[in-house]
Image (cartoon, rainbow, N blue to C red; front, side, top):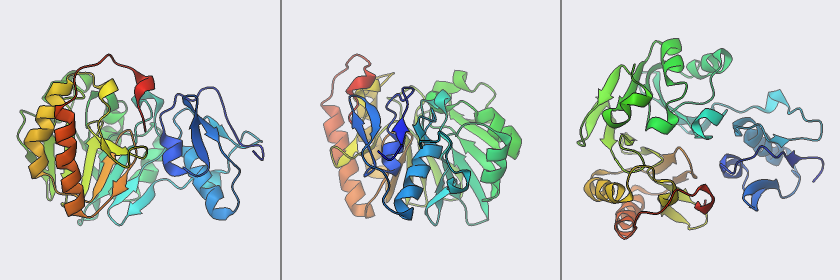
Length: 289
């Protein structure tokens, strides 16, 4: 494939395939290069996958990617940037920068830590808050918050993963944590999972639900629901009617933008489907992206 390859450290997190789905596919539970890039646009998409991959498994023949083609943070639209540089300490979770009208920003979950990356993210706007969706994504939260002089947020259900958090979300009712930004506790994936909703436009869903390319719809990863699939079903039933957004922006799984009315219909349908699920053993290989 023109020298491009995926090394054996790949653990099938799907991050690279989200960024270059026409160039990278899944074969036997790992990413594989499907074909070489044909033009500059495809080369850039492949390099986005390179710099997002948490294990740095995607490589050109030389083994050294072009640092000048690192696109991160990368705009998804006018209000949200994808951080890239996903961390192996969060199982390769996506993280985001939510830009605010005041010129500041909030970081949702965390990329891998480095001072150079932190300064790059801060150039998009002074980061006032680091919002953790749940315990699995807490790595690097304190370091980023301290570097930015920002507040670190987590739900009490997962507080032991970030015991030095500056703000603790409690209970199951929505909490406004900033102008236009609301935290919706959503226990299920973990006891302290939280969904952050911004501007009736962006839904940072953590690992509670995601867009499945295979299904062409919203999905829950019930095979890696650590706490309780019944609790997740109850959380979605309680919360679905309160949610209005265009973008679903998960930690794991793909992103998608749809008209708000269409997304609301899909969230309600997801709540109904999740109600029918029953507990199953944790099985990473059962996830269908």
